[in-house]
Image (cartoon, rainbow, N blue to C red; front, side):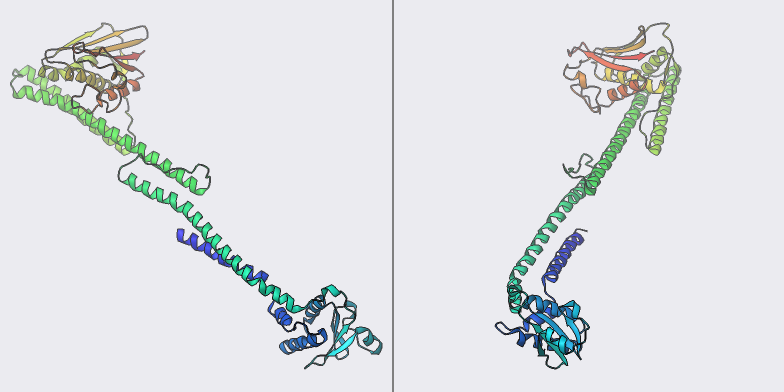
Length: 446
């Protein structure tokens, strides 16, 4: 495309130069007429020869009227051409096609024979305009003297067209090169790259660049959703696998020896496997639909049931560190519309986070109560605490701060998203002192 644009400008320059020469050049026959006149010669000697050449060239006097008009304008004489006693051409329009007789012939002027032709040329005297009587050769000389100027003008036009074509091609090729490089980087996984938009350009190319950036923004958002979905799915899969792993370790170490405890353990493992299947099914549905937002299946649930279920799931993790789990849920709390799986996952993440950051032989307490227009849950641990500078960021995705225990930094971010999906909010409190731990509070508005 760039080559075609460049060649188009060169072709336009060539056509411009050609038209310039065509418009400034004199007709070939007129130049022949002019060149037949010799400097310093008499009109009576020159014009018959010129007309004789015209007659030999054309074989008749057709269109000779224009030649007589030009010769009259250059010489200042009134001219009349007759043939067979008939006026063929004349600078006096009233004499055209009149018959030449004795009295009329005397008014035509001095007769001049035209060699090789039966015609006669009449010149009237004196000249109509003495100042117009300049030589035809002077006109030829003037035109010839302008030839170098015409050549220079043509070269200037060519150079200007060449430079203009380079500017136009460069203004198009540079943004297209940026688009090519940006597309290559996006293909390699760099979804942050964008092409620079021209400040004052509002043409189709600017629209194309804006469309490319819009497409890149869309691709980036889709990739972010994909990564978010994969990360959350991996995190959600890790939770039941960790629980199952804890139960299996208890079975292998004979800590779960009696039949009744073993049956409860197998039931818990069955529930965790079912949760993994739900996670996998959810992942498949969102992948097929292209949506990654969590869909809530709300139902009437008691807070006590959600707390008991979450504590049962983290019990193996707490036992591994000899951490005591306590539940302090107020009685007579009203049932709320929740997604028990999603909200249970949020509470599990808080408990898992508390156990991981608590020292062995510590304790983790879950409290729940009700205010005027809300139900609240608190997860309190006796762990290392959170530094004040990290508190505003701990719910950000992939943020780990000073509580780095090898996790991906997704658990608390998922808690915030689940709670927000239920119309609630979550916050954290900590003095940052080791042993005083942290408090995470979930508020659900009634």
